[in-house]
Image (cartoon, rainbow, N blue to C red; front, side, top):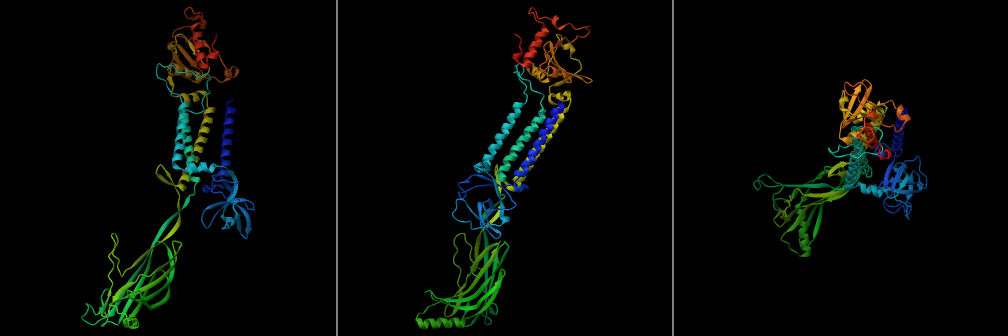
Length: 578
């Protein structure tokens, strides 16, 4: 019988392992080395065959044919698209939604196809979406943990309060496979498996990366300088420098310089063109442009240019304008105007921008002076006219690790997947270990199994005889003796002599006893009748027969009465004699 039970356990464990391996081969996601991808259908492009909320299970194929339903990664938008192959153009596939009147604009290659539809599970995707909400997942995990703990508590034995009778089960269970420690371990493994499953559903139901739109700032910075020769003693030095007023009677030419820089912390590669102009204008809107430096190519993120403004030429333009129009102005505007056109990439994103912030002067018949900067608004900084800056930004979409928010604790999806796989593997290994321990315990001798499972109840004794004045009642199973101990709120006395073991429960003046056997008696009689024999008192020669002890006029021996009572408690009222 033990050999048969052992083979059944081994076969069950082997089948479980084989099923687990098969499930891994068929259902393991690609993120953990498997061959299966999962996607939730959204939209109506594949109706009526596939509806929103369906779970599409995909597996790669050796080749794809017209009519196959496949999922591919759209290279333009980065989304996963589930459509049917409608044709082929060279190495690219032409796809179309069953409910669409147009072909997909993007044509993927075979390498961009995630897999062919293997199984469509209606509406399961909606359930996964619901489970992807951290609050819902926490509720499910808590309910599973409570059910597991409740099952363990119901399966365990509780000591009743002293003086309160405990109900007796009608059918005695067989010796449990696991000890209380094993049951607790099994409960813990169940909680771990449930938590790993829920975490895996949350993690594998969403991509490990997500596209996040962000603003990528950059600055275009300019710098102006000017200088001119001046007579000795007029300025601190012997020349006009940046910031000094310019007197037209003393200075006829003005040397100007301009520096440009693209400032960004992101990797970039840029080129462009630049020009440098002098612009003369008046308050009516009239203006005239003098080209100082023609359009020139540059590469990189910096450039430096120098030019000379002929103030005599500027004054000649103003005199000509006044003579032709008859207008007379007290002052005019003169500006050094850069025109930089930038193109290239910043952080892989295409950028096209211009920079044309001028350095402006007012010019009258006597002098040219720098126009002071405008008063800034509250919270703004004063703009340096010699260091103008233009701030730009790019709207970019970047792939960032997707995260789960579990009880306000952010967790990367990749880490969550790894934890779910590790938790599932640990629970599986732990379950297999418990199965092996259970098989080992099942093959052990009965005293060892009794000690493993009921060790808390057992009290080793040397001699329990003097306490059994009215006799000893043998019970058929250890479970029956345990129920008697529960009923009488008594511990189990364990006598051991060599290979012989006896387990006893003192109930008043009667001792209930269980003695392990080799199992032959149980095979002959599945319901052995309890037999009683008085336990010899110290110094007694031969114990009296069981029927010689009577119960004060009731016509039934006292030992027989205890025997009947024990049998009813151990096996149920259906064995009560009428």
